[in-house]
Length: 514
Image 1 (spheres, rainbow, N blue to C red):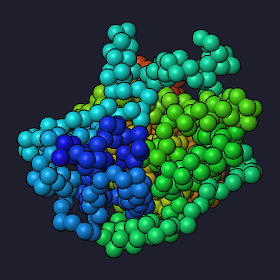
Image 2 (tube, rainbow, N blue to C red):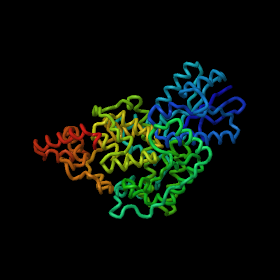
Image 3 (tube, rainbow, N blue to C red):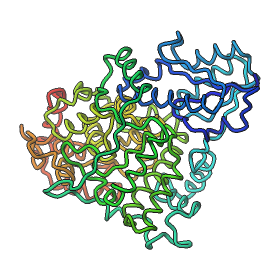
Image 4 (cartoon, rainbow, N blue to C red):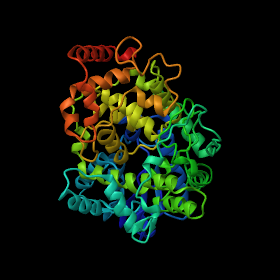
C-alpha cells in the first residue's frame, strides 16, 4: 500500500484533497465511527445521528465510484478511538504514508500526529481547500493587521475577502456603496410575530438513517436530545435542496430579522446550512454564489444578501483562522476567571426564565438554535452568571448538530464569553433583559420582569447585568464601545450598588432554582 487515506467525519466531499491523485491500485481509504467522538462531550443524539448517517451515505458514494474503502461501523469493532483504529490499519497494511486533509479539531490533530509517530509512518497532511482562506494566508493577514492594531477584527478581514474574490463588488467599491448593512438587519418581529414562514425541507429517514437512529438510541440512551424531529440533510443532494429552499423562500427576509426571536419558532428565516457546510456536503463558494445570484437577479435585497454572505465569507472563515491562531491556549482561556458550574437545567430546559427555556428547549429538541439565541440568550446568561468557559464550551460542542470545535470554541469562548479578553471582539457582549424583550416575545408570560433590577420578580438577566457592570466598571469605562453603559452605573448610589450586588449573589447561590 502506498497511501492509507483517512477521511474524517466532517470531510465528506469528493473534493477532499486527500482524494486527489488517488490510485485505486496502490491506495486505500479508511473511515471510522468511534465511540470517543460521541462521548468526549455528552453529545446530543441528533448530532451523533447526523455525523454517522452522513458518513455512511458518503461511504456509499465512495463505493459507487469504485474507491477501495474499509469502513468501521460503531457496533462492529472493538476500538475506542480513532488512533486505535488507524494503528490497527497501519499494522495490517504497512502503508508507505498516511494521508489526510488537515483536521478541524486540535484534539484530533494531536491524536493523529502521536499515532503516526508511534507507528513510525510518515503523515502527509494536505491543506483544506474547502475553506476560502488557508491557515497560512490567515496567519499572514493577522501578522500584517497586528502591526498597527492590538486586536484582530473580522470586519477588515471580511473586506479583504470581498475584494480578493470580487464578491458583491462594483469594481473596487462594495456593491451599493457600503460594506455592511447591519443597521438594516436588526429588526424585531413586531406584535404580530413572523408572517409567511415556510417550513424547512423534510426528508423521510432512509434505511441508512433509520439504522443509525436505532443504533444511537441503543448505544447512547442517556445522551441529551431526541430523534423524533430529526430532519437534517445527510447527503449532498439533500443539502442542495436546503440551499435551494433557503435562497428561494427565506433569503429575502433573512436580513431584517436575523437577530429576532419568537416563541416556538426555532428556524424563522435562517438558512439551516451550517451543518451541511461543516460536514462539507456543501462548498462555501457555491452557497455564496447562489446568494449573490439571487441579488443580481432581483430576487433578494442587498441588505439580506450581504448579511448572509458576511456570515459565510466573513465570520466563518475568520473564526476558523482564529481557532488555529489561538489554539491550544483558547481551550483554557478564562479572562474573568469565571468558575461557576453549569446548572442542571442546561440539560433539560426546565427553568422559569422563558427565554432560556425556549432557547435550550428547542436546542434539546432539534439540536439547533440560531446565532442570537446562542450569543445573546444562552451565552449572555453564561457570562453574567460567571459560568466556567470550559463547561459552557463543552455544552455548546455537545448539543448543536453543526458543532465542530474549530467553529464552536472561538464563537463561544471568544465571542460569547469574552474568555480570551477580546482578542478578536471589541467588547464583552452583555445586556440586560431589556435586549431580549426588544428582540423577542420571550418575556410575555415569563415570571420575571426585565425592567426590575432587584426583587423576587426581577429578571435574572437584568440583576446580573447591573451587578456585572458594577464589578467590572473600570474595564467598561476604558472601552469607548462600553463606556456609556457604566455612566449609568455612576448614577447609582452606594446603597443601590450594594443592593444589586447582594441580589445578584443571591440569584447565583440559587441558580438551580431560577
